[in-house]
Every structure is written in C-alpha cells, then in structure tokens.
Length: 258
Ligand code: PLP
Image: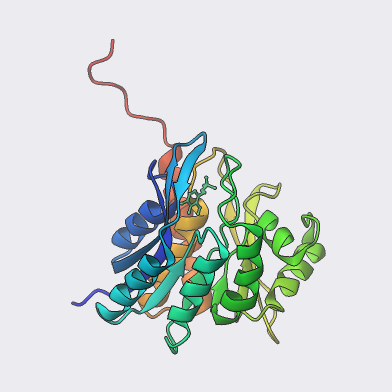
C-alpha cells in the first residue's frame, strides 16, 4: 500500500519538542510519508529560544521547488514562518497547488516568549496565506493578535473572534481552547454558512510542548488519508489527547535504582 505524502513547511526545533521534528514524528506515527521545507533553524530547549537562523530566500525557494517536484502531496502543513519574505515565498509556491488541503498553524510566539513570526510577517500571513488555507488552527492568543482584539474568554466572544479571523479568507478556522480554563479543552470549528462545531477532550494537567504542531500535523495526516475535515479534526484531537496522556504517564521505575 502506498502511504499518502504530506508536505511540511516549518521551523526546526533543536529540542525536538515542537516544530518540524514534532510534525515529522506525528506523520510517521499516523502512517504518512513526508517532504519537508525548513523555514528557520532555531537553537532552543524547553526554557528558551537562544537563537534562530532564517535561510536566504533564494535557498527557501529552491527547497520549495525541490520538495514539490519530488512527488505529489496529499496535504500541506505549515508551521513557523519567521518573517514576511518567507511568508511570500511559501504563498507563491502554494498558489498553483489546486485542491490539496493546506493546514496552517499560525505560530507567532514560543511558549518561552520568543517571537517566531514578526509583525510584517503577520500582515503578510493575513494577506497572502490565509486565503489559501483550508484550515487555520490558532490558539486564543494567536487569534486575538491576528484579529487585533483582546484575548477572548467566553463562548460567544470566542466564536465571534474565530469568525473575525475567517474574514481573512481561509475556508475554515479551528480556534483551540487548550489555553482556556475548564475541565475540558474545547476547540471550535467555524466555516462560512455552517453551524459552529465544538470538539472536546478532557483537559490533562501538564505542559507538554508542541501540542499545537502535533494537532495540525495529525489533521493534515487524516486529511491525506481521505477523511472529511470534521472527521479529521475529531480523530486528530482524540489522537493528540492520547499523546499528551502518554507524555504525562509517570516514568517506569529505574531498574538500576535502589
Ligand atoms: N519552535 C518552533 C520551530 C515551532 O514551530 C514552535 C511551534 O510551532 C515552537 C517553537 C513553539 O512551541 P511551544 O509553544 O510548544 O514552545
């Protein structure tokens, strides 16, 4: 059986906790092969992003051409984009892709505080990339920044903010409630002319990094396998919940210990 192939466009995370490394692990586990384009090299661990390097635009363009020429892709997952020229190059490369679903995780700031997409890049993302996206997957903070509003805190306000982001032209917005309060983590799917749909999973205490990357990659994987958007989100959310539970299981006893 030929496995579907997903194109990942993302930044490298030296710690392996988030970014490209997280994306590729998820795709492997969900039965997809992958092509990858590196938008930025970060030097980071769980506490800080010490430095980052954005490859020259010409080289980014060459990576995009090579990845797209290396075979058909069944879905595209986009993560960290760093700056405006990177956003423009990615948008130009994806404009002719046709019906292939594009999942855009609008990575703006690392949990440790460093900006991962500058202001000019955010403007370019709204103008050039959101209109190409099948689904954009912001958390509450990212949605607030992109819509120029304060962070939404309750039901109707959250839905209104997701709808405001939809105005930039993506086919759908999945506004993730993982950073909100409550016993469940609830994500809202909004699309033009459709009822809002909520996806819920019990909240797990802990602070695993890269869960946003993992969810967007898992959705891309399920779409690449042929699921509908709703089915892909449902199964990806369930799978990521399992991943976080796994990461929070107590470590097995040290066989060499006392
Ligand atoms: N570094 C890179 C390269 C990323 O792509 C991301 C998120 O997508 C992060 C860091 C941030 O991850 P976290 O917010 O989980 O620290």
